[in-house]
Image (cartoon, rainbow, N blue to C red; front, top):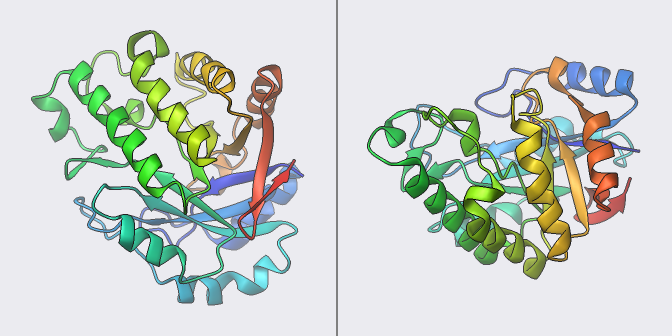
Length: 258
């Protein structure tokens, strides 16, 4: 079964999605669901992106059952000073899956425009990718997946926000090599598949991932409401298959092929 391996319920500070609505939508689509709530320690934004692993497990364990249709994970905000704290958090509950993400740079939330005002795109995008590569290497031992490599392109306040291999290939290669070295799976995130160049910009990145030894991807919508679950999954699955990348998900931190 295909799983949407990246979504957020009301446990995450930026989502109000109910578990029942998420499971109903996934069932209608014939796919499984993985809840991946936000854990971003020392987050600089307005919201407190943290939760109790024990309370989370107690809230959803009965719905999870044996993981047939629902799995419970976490999306860790990776920062270079949080290696020990992030590792300790992962050990507090029997998560099925751990995603690592870059949401901040040098203490700035990438969602807000302030970080882009006085920084050229090339400078900031290179810093973003350099930080990502270092974090994958330092935290790859306890994360399973790297999420949305193109996250910065969602919110960057530039005329052209795309993260392209043509412009940043050397820096993207370092991220991809770090993934292969640490056996961390690259997520094919469909959130930007409806952006003008969103999918097109990802194709060369995932092609290069395969060339460098990457073999697997997870599919994630990053849904914060039920309507977004499974968005563009047919396209994403076809893209992965065309590049020779297997679609996987995780149960009890072990890969399962979909």
